[in-house]
Amino acid sequence: MKMRIHPAWSVAAVAFIALIGAAGFRSTPSVMLQPLHAEFGWSLGTISAAVSVNLLLYGLTAPFAAALMAKFGIRRVAAAALLLVALGSGLTVFMHQSWQLMLCWGVLVGLGTGSLALGFVATITGRWFVKHRGLVTGVLTAGGATGNLIFLPVLSRITESHGWRTAALTVSVVALLVVPLILWRLRDHPQDLGVTALGGVTEPPAKPVGNAAKAALTALRDAARTRAFWLLAGGFAICGATTNGLVGTHFIPAAHDHGMPNTTAASLLALVGLFDIVGTIASGWLTDRVDSRVLLGAYYALRGLSLLVLPSILAATAHPSMLVFILFYGLDWVATVPPTVTLCREYFGAAGPVVFGWVFASHQFGAAIAATAAGLVRDQLGAYTWAWYGAGALALLASILSLMLFAGKHLKPVAPGLGLAVPAAKA
Image (tube, rainbow, N blue to C red; front, side, top):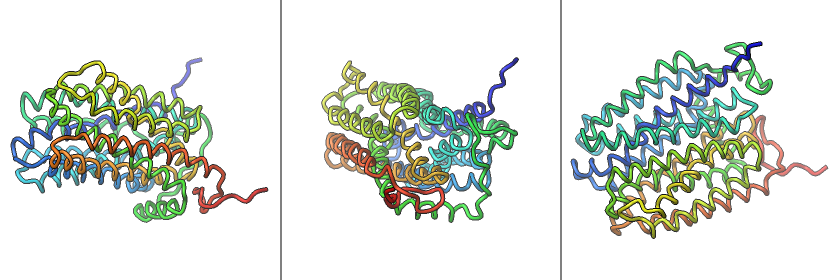
């Protein structure tokens, strides 16, 4: 008898490709910082501020996008998001003033990529998977790392050979090419194809929400009553600060300060993406087997220690110590996502994807602050050293916040689909 592949795998594959496409433009700021500075004379602080707007909107859009997916469907929202990415990327070739950079990089691309952020991942895995949910969350999260791996070296070489405008147009074309695939193969619910979620019977799809913004804000209001939400959000804000905000945005210019060519630094950052794929998938596998609170505590602690070491190993060449850092940091980059998604589902039930959208918003809030702060540190002190040390200390704090979640494992719900507001009464 021929075994039929469950359509959940097809949906996950299309989602993975969409996430790669969305990651394309998010790879460009670190490549374009120096070219924009050289052409327009804008300070790194000004350019970093535009990146911060992008990162902030990338996070703030996520919970509303999750609610919009409940109202209009995953397929429509994902296609519209990629169109925004293409528009924002394409329009950058016409800019001449810094406010136009804010509009294109910050607003348009921030809204587009935010709609295909980790709230999108949580929605896909929550609807389509019961079995292997943690593993698939890890694989989809790795889509962003795969995008970095693909785009960073390519965009760096295109920028060096043909200019940053050609690189921006390349990203725009790639985003547009993914849209037909989304419209063709992505489906909103297993019931659309007459099947159940992989690994079991799940709840029937919720009725479309009447007001997506209200649904997202209601989820935030209810979740904000809980201690667990603030611990998760605090840790994830530090996660964003120490990844997208600091290393993702400033590693290339920091390495350049030490004499390393931009193409070499971009290749190292792409290697982070390669190891990130392995680390995130492995984290998803572990999340199905190990308490997520333990995983988060370990991930953040190890990340903090590695950042404290980084200032002493930055140099003009990719020596063995730097390669060890790249390997380690890559494995740990977004390994935090699968356990965080799982904890949101555990604590907040059906509202988990939208609540995770808000937790992810805190991730990008932290990233936005770090992107601007690190640029200012560089402008004022002439080096990134104290930015690395500060980020390392914050990561150690995130480890403590994650372990504090153990104090809230046995709490009763405050509203349907939400949990952890008050201690459950002892029997």
